[in-house]
Image 1 (cartoon, rainbow, N blue to C red):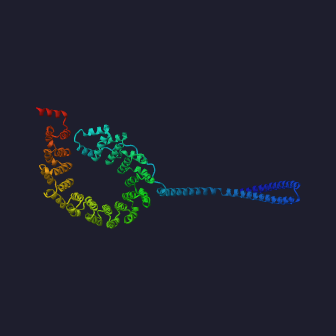
Image 2: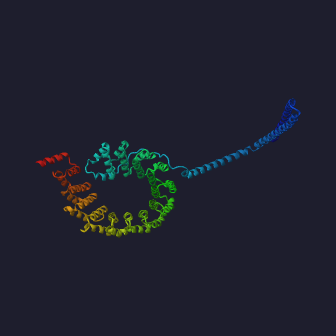
Image 3: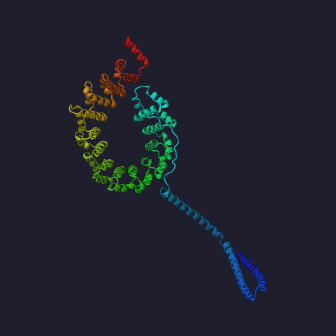
Length: 587
């Protein structure tokens, strides 16, 4: 019934539309006739014929337009009818379509995000302005290190005096103290030194403070360091270089974007520092960035050398084949090849061992030396170990020295016979000394017996005895009794004065409770330098058995004034005691 009603309405509308169209057509024809009459009045007969032709064409066009409108109207009615019949189905379908569309949009979004992540490193620079870490105070003091440093003080007042120098001293005084604290790894004044850094404008002091906190590995200056690396170009080069080393040591990863920016702008002043820093704090992400530099033809040889070492430290295994190619290229710069050999060692890929072994046949001794450096990373690979030991016999002393050091670090007991031979026969003093040092460190019976024999043999030279005593005392494994006996024998022989001094200094460095007797014997000497060495022994071990002897020296009118002052500081003798002693002496 509903459909019949709609059809009825459609017919009525069609009839009404037809009547309207007929009326409009009549009006158009009348207008056209009027227009033609006017034209006839104005123009000739030829024009009249032409206008009649135009009239016919216009009428045809009007008729076509009317028919088109009629067809559109019919289609509209049918479309409405169809829409009404399928309305419910369309609602359901639209819901399904909407769900599918949303799903597709979600998948497309995820794909785009994944593509962005994958292309982020390729499409975007890793450089930029680094985020500056928040300010922080120095770490809590390491009490063990503080106690060890305190034992080296000559006076109980030293700590307070040092603190006053930091607060009120001249730049030269502060600089000298900072050097001493850095050398001794003394952490007692970190808070005072931090405050000094925040307030000083002296470039030398800033540099020394950076070196101090680098030595004790305290990250309290990270905010300063990152801020400086963001824009280093107006600061002194020495401070910038010290800042790079600080960042490398305390592993300030926040500095990475700024470091990469310096590489990207290719500033020659800081390129090597930035590259080395990236090697210490970068990850595989940065290693991939650096690897692209391998194919750049515009880098200097010095920059490529640093690049080789950096790739090695970062274990950039994706560049391994390229590094091998560089090492084996005989036309390549020799120094670049050297660092390529070292880089293969850092990468610790065992396939690099035969490559390095082949490279050892080079005529360039510098390359052979760095081949040994590379092989040192493979101490458990028989082929590597064998070549390192054989390199102790290399013609060039630098290669021999490198091989000896590697044997020492890895305690290759098989190398001891080679080392003994070199200690006896080598023409280079540096090789003799390195061999003796390695023998003591490896600590075999054969090696220790050899070194002790040098101490006890009267035919051995004083320089050999001094070196043997030094390495044995440092290792602490053998020869202590023989060394003490030798030192005692030198006290009454002024011809052996230099040997007495050198052995005494080594005893002071490695002072033990068992050294109280030799300390007393040194203090009993009439030679001022010998007495001073005896005080050095006391300072590092505080033998209570010699303190009365020291007080006696302090009261002696003939004693050296600097010796007396040292004793007063060590024993905390007040001025009043000194005055009393003078009065007693005058009486």
